[in-house]
Figure: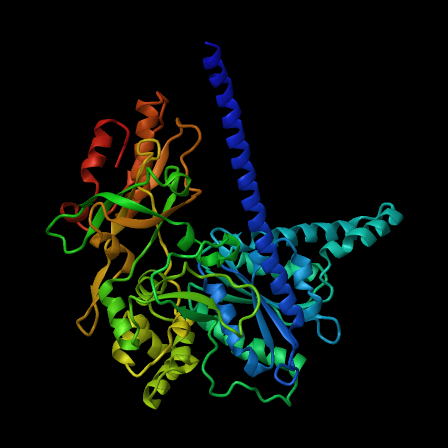
Length: 602
């Protein structure tokens, strides 16, 4: 008994030691990681301080582009300005606003980027997200501006206790003051939304309120019309002329010439397979974090919702999220982000045209000219095949500015002139007809229309847009299906004028993925919610695949009524389709909801 007791008393002690050792080990690893990140930051700062500006090459000095971007458009526009920097006499830096959230005024007024008058120059490209909200990467920045605006307003309006006010000015004004900054703002918005360009207007107003001086008035782009055209006109006709007149003068003639576009990346080819590097999320591009955080989940069920007599296709897809834990936790009527994959056929066509070996592994690095902080756009090492299939938008119509970049890699003058013509403002109609309306993507341009293009992989990755996730409103109730997500997908297929078939990349990826096959997904919060008081009636309007969130809401209301024993209000649904016998999707389920009196009227 005594021996047994000794054994029993030893076990907790040993377990305690293990726990202590494990905790110490974890703390050591975290400390080591933090020190490594700080060392990398210090190295980047040191390299920046050692940089000597070539004033003959860059007589305009430093110009910093700060962007707030949700889908990557503002980031792409920022890099367009950077590419034009040298020929206009400026050393351009591009900065993600999320990178400076811990040191906003210090970065905006960085001493190393001062001109001879002690001034800094900044261009802000600000997208507006949703109903007048900042993009995820600009949240801290806009909060800083609002706080600064309130502070200065208080200083101006307060007339009580001037001595106290003077003390406050001395102690606090530098916290928000941007008096040595000169700036311009371009807003990216859409007039279909009530709060058109809200973030562009906010930044333009607040930066000025904090003492900065405008270089030029706020410019606004409208995605409901021609956002890229608005940006290009502003950039070429207003921004560069204003900057050159103010900071460069007429003597500078430009220094770019016919050189190839600068690549932001370098490629290190590997001789064998290698797993993706483990990197901090602080070192990942904000607009492509979903490449690193999405989870592979299996499709467990898939069925056609339309009649066999209908030429179109709408699929009901169920995805198992039981192993995804917090990454894909959802509430009823949230959104599901799905990462599409380009078809093997299209990837092979592009690789053949450019001479890429699809099975080769490579690591993506910053280009030698791209000193400073490197934000990884997607996980590497990976194969060329994974890069082209998962991370490059080779199907969507490229922007006009992308055609201009492609022209630099064309080996014959006819191709070069055609691409430059469509990239120009005068060629907008031709571009719309031959590229946008014809549904022509990078793969079609390079493999069929302009086969003389030769472009190294690092340049292709630099200029090709990233393949964006598609967001679907979840069509299942999280209360009824906590381990499964349902989406309603209209499969996009159409015939081009030349007889070839255009296929929507994400819907066809889902359609062609076999059951038990996996797709990469993540959940996204939505403001689309049922009333907190279940007894309140609701009206739902959802034609076509717009029925998806309504299905989820009806499942939730049925759950509230049957399982939670709540008093549930009336539910009225307005639904539309082409023909009842062809595409009345979820007809059987809706009839069941009617019989159970969950659906009051349809």
